[in-house]
Length: 270
Figure (cartoon, rainbow, N blue to C red):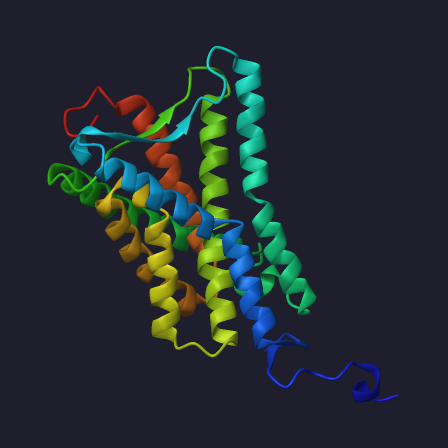
């Protein structure tokens, strides 16, 4: 029996997704749903948060944005349970993306989220982290000095034994969530929908900036630039994994570094 006789007819506006054709409408709806359950919702929350900051009557730089805070002050084991719960549930949209890719007879390997090239990914990711992380720190200090950014307090966790492991886990979770969805998945789907590289890159970068608006306009601008750089590197290498490595290292350095440096060095806003 031929393939044409085995498979159901393709929709007239089918978009190629692996060996499985889905309509453009279905694929577009899929993208909106993934974003609504993940970083698109975070972007809306960040806009609401920034609105509150701008209408508070206080200087932006005089207000604080906390990245990781205690979820049960004074109750360390309950706090730990909530922290682990938050990390695990934040990754559910990534699993959903994996499901949608598999539906189209693709996989995470399609966007380069795998361990095929571990050594090269680690090397590239470390180099990107050093360059982007250093520039990002300088940009943050400058933006805060101009009053365009809130004071970012990466961690207000209590000094329990699990503080550092949780900060590393949060860093990895943020990296996987953002790079798999906003970098790999979104660019891949927009390519399938026929978007130009420039339009897809701009969309990915602006989305990345928007869910960092809770940090202020400096956080938005810095992450838009980071989004453009990451999109370029993703397309150049064809792999999202080096950028996951880079993002994990950047966030780990920021969260752990700030835990021990805030209030102890004069050059870091606190």
